[in-house]
Image (cartoon, rainbow, N blue to C red; front, side, top):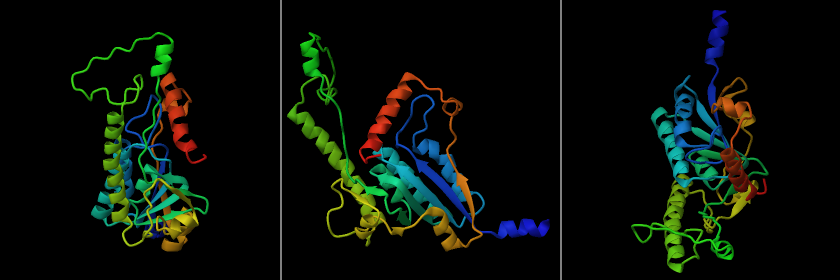
Length: 267
């Protein structure tokens, strides 16, 4: 028995962390979006428990919050450097926008031949309801202190100066995104502009330097660490209500928003 335990302990361990879903600071009752607060304890265990040889990220995300993407990516890098544990990202259906930001935290990025990768840009979408209100004789009443407090109010006509202000804010966030990718993929990126929001599939992502190869998680980890590698999966805990399929009206709205994120990539 003792020799059996020793043989098991001698097997190299790789922690597997699944990062699947939309990235958001918070979710509705029963939902589990990807965010720094929720992933912090999971990532701590993945890097520190059992002295892993590596951490493998299984990523399937269309993106979401740029701040949460940055926080999660920074935490992954911080833990990797503190523990001296390398990180490998494996992109599944999609690792786009904030999902690609997470992948860029890895030392190497692998894709499936059909993975959608990229979308390095910033988007803000809304609706305009002012004509609908006028048609039905509804008067909008808003009182603010601060002339920019009601910026881009969907119940008022767009103002050119407000659009310009929004684009200026997006430009800052876009630059932060570009800085992240350029620093993490230094020396590997193609000379063409990769920051237009364009997406690439499989080998095309490798050709422009956004990924390092076509590979799947299990066979690649066996190739790198041997057939006896012990893959330990660390996943987010789902709430009891989520497991029972119990939701609220806000969950329905969140679900619609999430589907919109995925639909941008045909998924």
